[in-house]
Length: 405
Image (cartoon, rainbow, N blue to C red):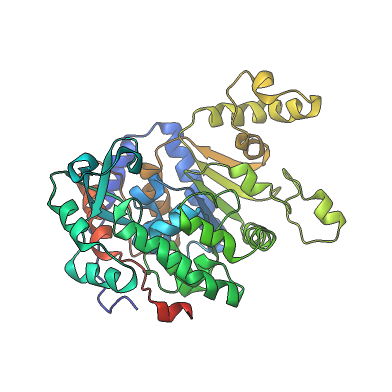
């Protein structure tokens, strides 16, 4: 589907991971070790691990590419994500673009983003021809974009750059009739054409769930709309609940709206599944789940400790007091459910540092050898791995023939 060649990324060595570990606080490093041991123990007893990711940093740091490799190696059994992440993966995860001042091209101000810059995807002639076969491309506009002075950067693929952005949205909308006809989510249908080092592509090959959650449908432009329209919200909620129910360990990474994902209409311990249960619908509980959350917000650590030491969150709920006032902290609602789960564990650190250490240790315990390991941005190794993704994690294979149109 994507060729027989399997180029290997630069290897992340033990010494590289030790350098990362030396930059972390001892408490954070101990949490990472605990999480890795739990991960290995779950897999050793035949349990399942589900990862819930947000957008942005997970793509930029190569975490989604690592998760794809972990799916392939059997260390991850399912993924919950956002429509933005799904769209970026359909477009190849990361791409190189040139950022150009729109005024140089005579573009009106109201057409441009807030900084007044537009982007050209720096792609090969072959790739440009492939895109032009799928969607109409203004080759003169593209030539002017590429020729204009500007800064070249690596960023998430299929976003604002021309022509990969409009190609991605048209491709997603093109898959929508087939997804509806098959009664499957659009991300599952599109995943069959995605690169194996994307979460969508790896999950499709392993017959594992890779789903956009209901709170994370908003985003990704027409991709999010197509994903949202492919199956009903009720069906999507059922599939998300089944995925969470199957998990013994849930790893949350750079994620917003986690509580809304947890306490959807079928969860009992922190959520709103009580009446679904009364109606006889399938429900599940997070009571006995292990939940690891990677988050840079220091308040999660304080709220988690306050709940452990004096059940402060539970008391605020019991007395009907606003949590922010009762706890004396700025409060994100999602911390409420997380803090009350007995098996929860916060890791307050940069996910670009946590993931290679945590996954590397878990893989070592399990004797696994994933095909990709990420490393934090801003380092020589991290940037070489980002370049590998740009060069080798290619966009999904798409044509009108594949959509059934």
